[in-house]
Image (cartoon, rainbow, N blue to C red; front, side):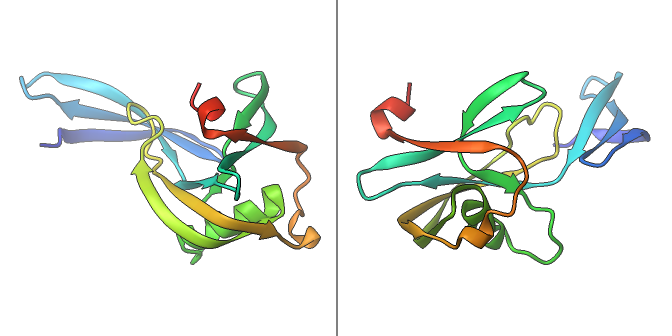
Length: 153
């Protein structure tokens, strides 16, 4: 059962995120304020090569204050583009790869306590080199591959 929202106010409206504060009625009848980050949905790709290695991208992430190893991923921010199209575009842009086989693994909420974002995770297989033109990003990133055992640590 969803809590009843009795008041909603916008606190911040930025380029990537909007923050609102909802006043909700809890099951015991008391009221509480809940901060909500409205964020675009996203995709992530578990790209598995023919040696059963998973592709990881290393990028600087300012909120973390460091470079992180991540799955290729991106925001669903192009109007009319289905999530699979976003995943295919992101794999091409971030890793210069195409995949012949795509499978949806899971829809998950990375930060359900505060964010509206839903991330669809795909598995991509039968990888092949894509067009060098697809790498039109200006952000600096490097890539690596880890065996499943290493990636699970």
